[in-house]
Length: 90
Image (cartoon, rainbow, N blue to C red; front, side, top):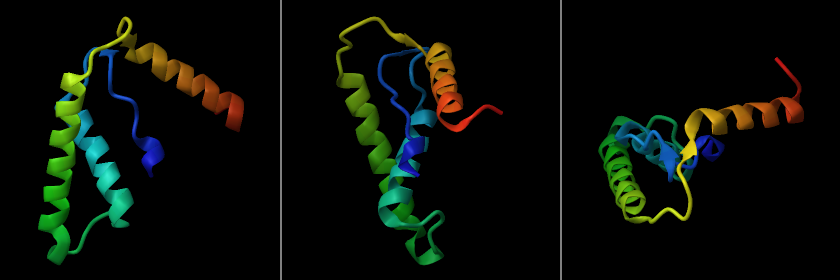
C-alpha cells in the first residue's frame, strides 16, 4: 500500500493539496490496517488523514530544494520504464 506514496517535493508543477491528502490517506490506511474504517472509527480515521496531510504540507513548504525542480512527466516515464524492465511490458 505505501508503495503508492510518491515523492512530492521539488517537482514542477508543484504538489497539490489533493496529492498530499492522497499520500496521507495511504499512510493512515497502512498504519491502521483499514481500507475504509467502520462508522465507529470514521471520525478518528478522517481526523488522522487531515492531521497527517497538514503536517506533510507544512514539511513540504518548509523544505529548501538543493537542485532544480524535477519534471513530473519525465519522472513518471522513468518509473514506467523501470517497471517494464522489472516486470515485463504491457
